[in-house]
Length: 248
Image 1 (cartoon, rainbow, N blue to C red):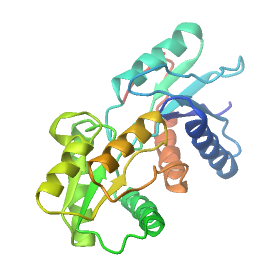
Image 2 (image 1 turned 90 degrees about the vertical axis):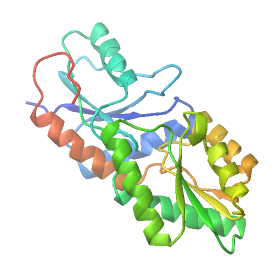
Image 3 (image 1 turned 180 degrees about the horizontal axis):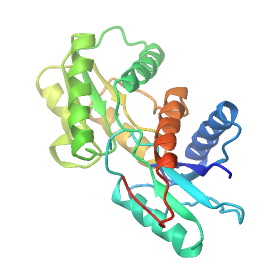
């Protein structure tokens, strides 16, 4: 019996930069696990989703939310995405795995991208950090994000604030403006975003316009994300049942 197909679900709009990240992640997966067929979906928080082209030979599909803010529950739009796929493919068993989530290993990726951004901006010193995320996550994800903020602060011996793309007091421009009112002038924003899409670029622009000295690139197609996605796939594939959809 063939292994379930692995679908990497990226929280971004399907555009050139995000498509490239998706295909590179898929290539990493295919290189490490050639016996498992894989594909890519795009499920942004707002906007049109893009499902994979379902092959007639597929019998089971595992959706892997490649997501850096949700740890236990998938974003609601993913369940709707799974329902849309099943509506057109009744014989396809679909399971939604746990999101890859915010894990401490991602801080190393943020640091690497922040160092590169600092080098390009010729930044000599920093006096505060902002951990930028697309949303606040689910309850467990939010708790882990708070933990990551503390860990990052301890590692760099700098104050760290979290910012989201959800608006209000946690909006990145509000957080940066608040730090500047406190007298901080060398503010770096580390991005806990998966893809460089239109939403991320607008978020980056707002941070820079508010006074951030630099903003790191998105996480992209890093091997760490591929490894996390495969772990979630294995757990979900072992429990795959013949029901149409199930969210864990």
